[in-house]
Image 1 (cartoon, rainbow, N blue to C red):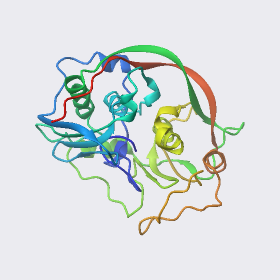
Image 2 (cartoon, rainbow, N blue to C red):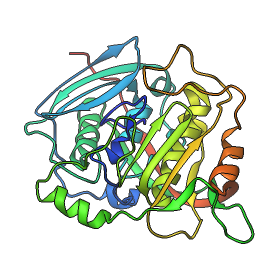
Image 3 (cartoon, rainbow, N blue to C red):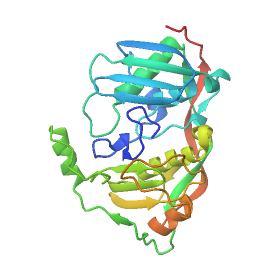
Length: 308
């Protein structure tokens, strides 16, 4: 995942970190019209960095990250679905090359939420960008290339690894919001109303197809290497499938990861199917190129911050 709440190897996605689902996406234009003033970090340090890159939202309201400014802007406009850096338009060259380290602390711990990363975190990042980088933006709507996730078979049958989830997630969510513990599960078992992403694999206990499309967006970005998030297309659910689905999806990436997986994590089969083939064979789904009018964030002005 590329989102600030948690970095992953083979752990629960931040959008399902509590074993539950991701929030619905909020239109960018609505985000830009958030009630002022935006929430702010209590204290925040910003300084140039040579890497490595990474980001993490921690319990207690702490946030640490090392990224480019364009990446931070994309994070600042994230609510439920990833915003590719290609949807952050304009700005000087240095916002794609210079790395900055942010070490910040909120005045209160992040609020317990079954819907994934706390909304306040992203608004605080946006506030920090305005204060320290003098960032000013506006919204526009443009035609952009996307992928549509659709059923691959003319008879609309599902693949052998895709099945409707029998779990009552509404009841689990209600129990969690009432203060109950996350549902128990075995190691490397997906949460009953969430999903896990590991090296070249997805395990889902029960998620909507729209959330799976979001996950595929991240995988397509990762597949393109360091610049992937800049070039990857958004994946939009057009399957027409309603409810939650459980599945296992395993593929062989074009670039095999270095090193060996941690104990308990299955190694990647170097002779397995590519992602697009695995989608069709295992889930009965496919990605088809399309275009869609989408909102983008246009940079009006941004400045290098004064290190502290």
